[in-house]
Length: 381
Image (cartoon, rainbow, N blue to C red):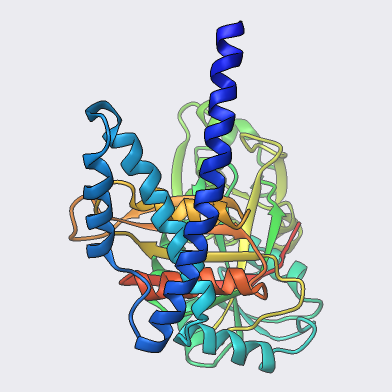
């Protein structure tokens, strides 16, 4: 025990020296930032970083080289973030944020023309009713059509599902966010209920086919596994499935959808709350063609593709950590046509009004070839 205490005392002394040296190094980074501001040099200088790694590695024992290089990659990452903060670079993102702060009203609108995928009774419609007090809803058959309606100016906003607590992300919406330039201006975490609906007088034993959206079928997979001999049919929307059952001439068809659809389409509930989990929540986002920044926005969503080299993701995470920011979502999606390269999606608890956060985002914009700011917003629960 005494030997351990003595060694820890040595480490404490070294840590004190390291902290002082790192503080001096960050001061030098700010000094370099001022010189780069005068010369117009970029923040990132990978050639210089490689030179430093080669030099410090020569002074390390062979078994320690990898550890030391990993530490220095983190030092480089936070140094670049420090320089970006000091430079306050005039990037397109910074200008866009400044303009949005001026143009955006103090409160989110109570009513607007809103695009939803599906029909009356769809979960997107129920989520829109949570986000707006009196929306004027327009329905479309595909997610892509919702984006088109907002892009054309037909609708000011679009409401779309982005993630479910049971079935995971709605990848098609993420792909469309990558393909199109839109911004998230609001979000809601909506508790989704799935019930089995059929025509009046039909019993559960008569059901031979169950229709619903593929996400709903996935969210109810445990209960569905117990329905032997029943065919599952994926539809474009849960409410569309309910309407189809109401209009069908067959008795043996049923729909998995919200209980609200029972009254809307004259159906009866055969089985209530058949989700795999009682805590079945779907996050719905409200998108806009123009960036809107409302007071109190405390969540930031980002997309980025990172260099295909060891440690690149770790460098990004270290920058969030250096500012004390909490990542609430990190997900990767393969990039079509590029082997083993991915787009990463981040949700971060952060206030974009903070100069440090703005500098971090502008730093990503300057350093990365593929970076997209998706918006800052409030997520209602």
